[in-house]
Image (tube, rainbow, N blue to C red):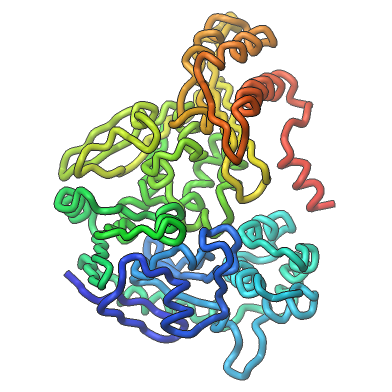
Length: 490
């Protein structure tokens, strides 16, 4: 058992013996260290003004990524390298190429959002060479700028690569990696503070024991939702059990006919594997929050959270995914659709936690469709998310139908009546009309700030019609993503 939090801040080894479990990285930077370059705008991971870059070991290799400091709990940085905008300026006072490019291209007006934008571009600088305009826009989607506009910022992102080769951070990767490896151990971190306890096991066996010992503990993965319980709901969480040090939970494995995705695999981690199943899945994963959220948010968290508007559960349900739950040494497998019982209520027994999700690969002849409808294309929560899988028989009639929605009920849910209306029919307008007519028997959606009940029912039906168009009239453009990509390159 270790009782000291350890991480590297810039060049400094930080050791903290007492810490509140939900102290955010942003509050620690600004209030404890007086490093005020990182800003608080939304306090919910939307605006990106708080963006910092963390380096962590990923299967032994050093990996840097942008994250939201406003909702990230400080103790989760154990064994990581933390970089803020203050660390970019050289010892001689010279601006980093990212900063210089922002100056040269007039990428800042009021300047409030600028440090976060700089850090998002810095993460891009560390990880990629000569990214496309669309890739730059992806990296900036989690940073909101109200006054400058993105054209000069994108120009700065292109310019920064022309201002020199790699910087000191890139050349120091080997030494930082060795430093983080020296901090890595198999001990359980147990950190106490006035507001409660933070526990971070390093093995899945210890995690299983802790969840049984503390059945009322809050399990934290990426904190992209739990962080808001603290910053917006002002909730006190005690104790907190953090899953991030358990490497076994981060694995994504291709096992031939299915994927096995560990609960702590992030959205960024799994995007390539899911994209290989369908380009539409790639589009969906691209639209999970901003890049900072995708770097932190996890597959297990998106499921265990139980949100009726989580984007991934409808897709996984349509694919026939199963959930692996663990309690102690016992493993239980259930269909994902049966995991969701009622609003924020799941089939998770006391002492159980989500270990992994098993995702069957669709058959080569299966028809798969995924759609997310939201007010904004980027960084927005769904009003409706639809995912459909059809298998046609040799006679061309629908032999199997899985129709799943998010945002239409208190849980992600299959449309059983609509599915029954499809079975045995030819895949045509008449089949879609029958399924649409059946949707009111499956769902009585709510009206809220995102959409009215009538709008949701209308959209749910229209997504089925889009599915038909995409699979029978492939030359018809039904998606804005392709048009946006063309505009970016135009």
